Image 1 (cartoon, rainbow, N blue to C red):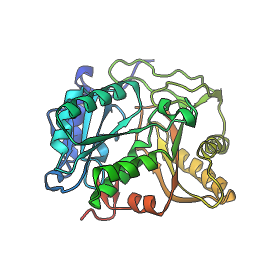
Image 2: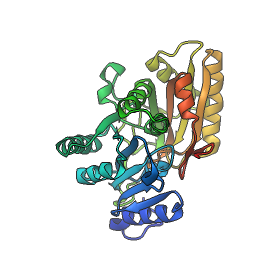
Image 3: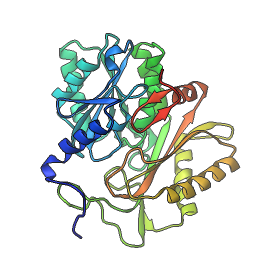
Length: 336
C-alpha cells in the first residue's frame, strides 16, 4: 500500500518538523543548532537541569515536553534514530546552570549507545551529569532482568517528576534518586492492531492481519510474542491491566498512576472506553487511581494501538506529578 503523508522531501523531514514545532511554540522553546530544542526560561534557572535525547517521529515526544517544569533540553535525532553523542554533550553544557544535569535516556539500543558515549565524553570534560534510564516494557523481559526492558511512555512522567524535584532546589543526586525510585516502580504494555509506516522510506514497521492484535508490540513494532485474535475493548483492558498489576505486585489499598497513551491512529473514543474498564477493574481490587492521563504523549506515526502505563504512587510522587509545568503538550497549574 502506498504511503500517504503530507511531507516534502523525506531527507528534510526532521529539519522541517523541528522548524515548524519551534515556530508554533516560540513562546516556550527555541531551536538551536538545528536539532536541539531548548526551554526559553533555562537561562534564568537556578536548579538542576533535565536533558533527554531520542529520534523524531514520536511527536509530541520528546520535544513537546520541553518547558518550565519538565525538560530543559531535547536533542533530536532523525526519524526513529538517536542523535550523535557530541550533540548531547553540547546540550548538557548548554543546560548546566551550575547545579548539574540529569540525563534521561530511553532503553533502546541506539539511544543507549549514544547515552553511554555521551556519559563517557561528559566525564572526560568534567561535567556534572547523572544518567537515568527508563526501561518499563514488561513484554520483552521479566522484572528481574529489567535492564533488558524497552523504554516506552514512562519517560514522560519521569521527566515531570524529576523536574519538580529540581524545582524545589534539590541536589542532582537527590533529583536522580527520586527519578529512579519512580522509574523502578512503573510498567508499560503496548498493544497494536495495525503497524505504522516509516515516514522517510514508506516501509511497514509491523504487519498484522485484519483480525489480529499484538499485546507486547513494543515501541516501533518490535513485538513481544503476544499476537492473538482481536479482542473487545473490555477484554483487552483486562488482559493488559492484569499483566501490569502482577508485574508491579500492586495490592489492595495502594495508589497508582494510570496512563493510556495513544500510538498515533487510535481515537480518544477507544481510549476512553478502555479507561472506563480499567477504572472499574481497579476499583473492584480496591486500588486507587491517584493520577492519570488519557491521550497521545508518545506516538509511532499512524500505528493503531496504545500503551497502558501503570506506576505505584505515594504522596511525595503525587506532589511532584501535580506540581506546575508549562510545556507545549503538558500544562499543570501555574509555572510561576
